[in-house]
Image (tube, rainbow, N blue to C red; front, side, top):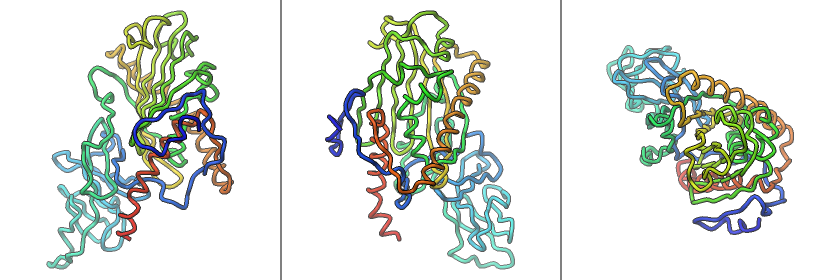
Length: 378
């Protein structure tokens, strides 16, 4: 793996797009092992999706029900009544609690049963699990692991989604593939040349050199394309003729959040040196939450720092990016079906896979760190 042979060490290491990564086979998806860590914040919903109604969603293989209390505080409970396991999402809200729609047991926001029909004494074991929830960056985040470790400071930084110096919007796509395939896709943007050639891709993306750096929880892929013809999307955003300097800086935070710093500026105006004032800059925000072993919730947004007051542009960009991501969805779901059809086949890694390899390695480290805890609990 060239310079990246020392990948097992901590701190910073790097590879460039011109170094040899690996030609050896690697597992496609290890379905026998747990695929995600529990002790992490996962995006569960856009903030506007959850209100004063019961909202079911499966997160990390667990069925949950979300709602807001009267003061708008979000709540997440296991979506199964203690009594007969009927989904609580089939019931209704009663004040700040939930009433099961089958036999009328009522649960407070902390999951404790507060009422049982036809009896005064409450069984002390009657409760459903509640999960820590944080509202930040226009998303509701849920912590699936040990609640004592649920530090809100660990919520991934996606501040562009609400920063007044940026404008944008996004959507949710539920993709029928393992969430790690989406991460692979985002960590290697050379696929733009071949999957998105009519919009954001051109030959320069696939051929430009890149650099990969990492810490114990992050991985970054940096690619600059100097003096190139802009692809159609970026030519339209810049609105100026001529060659451009284009950048893609992919910032991964384990286990599943990627913020991509993207943009173009007229060639030679100083963008590679730090002066982007004559260009246009965007952030593609992505956080991917496992739903099941073979499906995931893909939350994304595109935010820009130009023409901030133009709501029509925000709408056009959201719809345009949605169409582009629809192309990815088609490829990823086909890839998942192929993996399931060939369970003994292995992935082979190229130079372009260095960022994705680091992302997977960091995820695996988080899972491994939880293993003693999980064995003890079982």
